Length: 77
Length: 235
Image 1: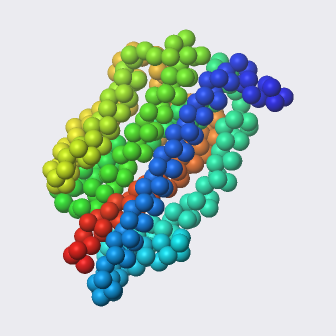
Image 2 (image 1 turned 90 degrees about the vertical axis):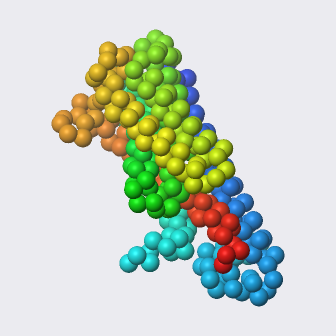
Image 3 (image 1 turned 180 degrees about the vertical axis):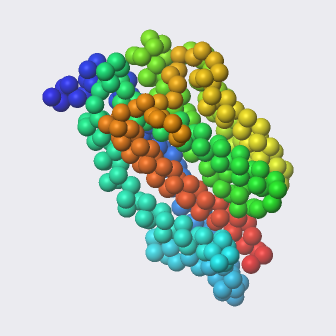
């Protein structure tokens, strides 16, 4: 039964090939997008942390995004 | 009400939406794959090779829909000059390109057992390759042109020109004699596909739409952070 399922009545190579290509491509794009997002979050948090404490306070007060990125990066650490 | 459209509020919602889609994606994927590979019946003519349809057709739909969205948003951007629209088009483009390429490759794999060849310069297939090229030019324009305003204008122009190709793809199977079969699913009129195959097809389409939403939200979030990082000195 498993043999029949895998061979797909002789079309296994085409069917499994199509599904494999689709999911490998989707997996790679997900991985690349996730990595890029995390890198930008880390870099942004690092830049904020490098500011003087006074400036950092102003940035956090004026930007919700900056405070969210900082809090999420501190959670990751 | 308009406060919702500020980047800070959108950013907050992006995180929540990403978590929500992550939590429901895999159960839907498992159900979709089970129907596509196990429960749906083989075709009376094509046999089990018809299962390629469950990735090929949704991929083609997404490729077409993504470029239509990009073209419409580019037109709106020309008229209303809303910066967020550019962020959206930039986030959609890689998704559309990937699914267009998937549609071409899986279509080629489906072509071998069905038509006896991996490739023919058929109207539908050629117009899909042209669509992929428009995606590539759109993405390259954003990467290579350093001045953001100029890049936005040129990429929007590319999208508007590329939109001409969308009806050509849609009606290519009717306008020319092609190996590719005409559409089995029609929004207006009766579809010629049996419900036992239509249901898994729509399920797989939904799963891939969830995936697209996930990638789009992550890309959009990245773009917002990139802009905030650039404007850090102004805060």
